[in-house]
Amino acid sequence: MKADKAVEDVGESAKVAGGVTFEWLRQAEDASLLTTPARPTATDHGDSSFSVIEEFNYWRMQPDLAEAVAAIKALTAVIRRSQASTMMGLEIELKNASEALKAWDETSIPLSAGCDLFLRYVTRTTALEYEDIRAGKARLIERGERFGEISQKARRTIAMLGQDFILNGSTILTHGFSRVVLNLLKLAASNGKHFNVICTEGRPDNTGAKVAIELLAAGIPVTLILDSGVGYMMEKVDMLLVGAEGVVESGGIINYIGTFQSALVARSMNKPVYVAAESYKFARLYPLEQRDLGPSPCHVEFVEPVPEDAKVENTARDYTPPNYLTLLFTDLGVLTPSAVSDELIQLYL
Image (cartoon, rainbow, N blue to C red; front, side, top):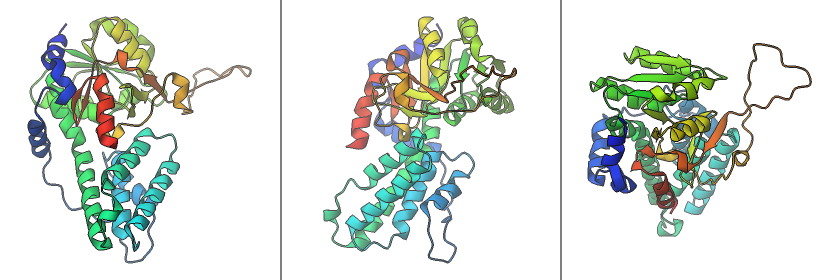
């Protein structure tokens, strides 16, 4: 199998940093991102009003900016605009702003995980270490901006690490719309690799068509299939590559509905299952079964009218346990599912 060689090359070192040193990873991150222009402050309009939701919505509308990164930028703005006279007061403001953002969309795992990680990152030093509020505030702003920079680099770093697993002549199955997966595939193609991509249609919102449009524009051959055709097409596939809405403590993932069944089929036919996910999607969740995810209803239009007495159950995402996954491509390195819990502990320490 074409993808086996790449898995073997990683071996046990994947548990540490994807078979590369942390110094290499740092250099890769630096090289993968040109200096970004200074950003405007969304709510600097000359008045004293400030809304973390408005700031978040401003950044959320920026092209290709992930929802979690928009939240990180909004929370950094909270620190910058704070009038708190003590570090404890500032931390309370941050926590309240974080809760407001999470309440804005209670079903969004990346948003919740991004807020939690940001708070943990910027408040690692206790408030008691800063007697001067100005010095403490400056330090928190510095940490917040650094965290935002790291998060924005994540997709580029993952693309650099993951492209090595894309082999010439391979066929890749994708499911769901993931910017990090698209970036990875586009980078591999731009580096001269020739491969084919099979996209599931992605009902109910036709994510497969969106993926196909982007890949075709990059000169990558694409085949669209029915969601129900995954088992039929799997024998032609060399790997399954998906994104994730959330990476949970077990090493499993929460993602677009249908990911679990795709991984189930792939694993049963000895095809590797790769996940590309940013570390700000690492969430302190431990689902044991599908119903532990909670409600995530989505609207589906049926071609034929639904019988009046028939029940309709639609959900937007499912949980894929770690035993169906081969490796996770993250900005922390290439990880085995069993290594994810260790990384989560480090992130939340």
